[in-house]
Image 1 (cartoon, rainbow, N blue to C red):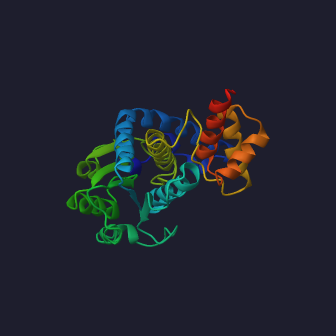
Image 2: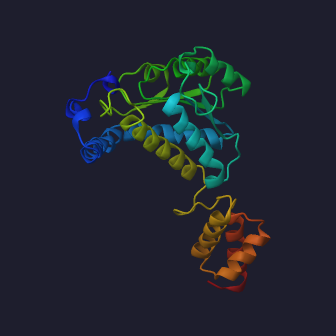
Image 3: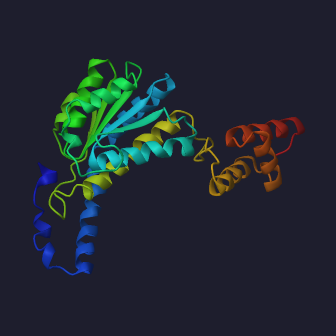
Length: 273
């Protein structure tokens, strides 16, 4: 298994200075983009299924353990503020309770099914298993259960010809190879998984209609930074000034897309720009 093999380019890792170690890591990280690019068409196919699932009222579930689960949680958590979807649209189910990688939860062959049952996962949904090795029992059994209830399934792994890839309807397997620190898949494999999850969710949300041009027009202005961002988007899209953008945002109760529609409607009536 590539992710568990020794890296011939880092055999002397323990003899290197800190500067030499990070240089070696940086050299290895450059290989990640190549590995991801080799499965880019597969990633695109999954993203289309992801978007189609949302368009038809389904949900997307991520399954993962350890680093893979943590990355899945991070991606799912970003969806409501960035794209304005509800918290029950993209859901990360992890083997552990929270970020606690010190137990054997990933070895469970029933926990994933139990969690999917709790959410009444079914035919309208998509379940994406994320596992660097491609063989994590929690993810393997979760995908099997998802298929048994008619859900669409996809696999994201960092080896080729994986168990989860064999089970899933769709797969994206980025062959990231051996890590600088043998078996530490939070490194290159984790980076590849983060890249792929970024691509899947962003492309899907664009296709779902949550983006205008390259603006996140459904952003939830939950804090000062996001309020400023939303106002700037309104100004950029409509060409209005800050006062008009602020007034429209207040009228739209903070919803960026609605504020844009309000201003454009006024512009159409008055013949303004």
